[in-house]
Length: 153
Ligand code: RB5
Image (cartoon, rainbow, N blue to C red; front, side, top):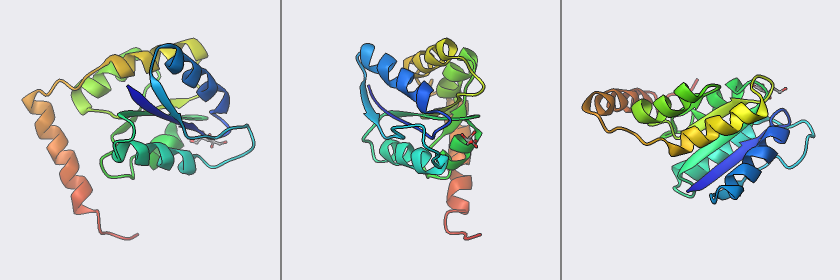
């Protein structure tokens, strides 16, 4: 699978581990930065990953910041992106199976390296169930997205 990965300074070190683990597992990885621990802004990397997924350059995305929250908020602003924070394996697979989550967000100051790597493995191994109730709910999510698409704050 092609996986886009990004992080701000808070997530840089964990991103390095995620990229290495993904490559070792045979995934093609688009590492979209940051490439060092200099202070940086999580929206830049959340956007880069979200755009790669939206454009079909990557099938899934992983974004790491300090808490996972900022990255998740930013990634979800991109239409077609269904980002979620997963710091446990249940959320990592159920978020895909039920909610078709296509970007997982991790907080490097919240979760340890080994669990984070397991979360990413679980996320990538999961598939959307296609169950009617989930398709219906996702259609409602898309309606919300469309309704506010042209609004400016
Ligand atoms: C940066 O210090 C921090 O705010 C960021 O990594 C992230 O935790 C935001 O949600």
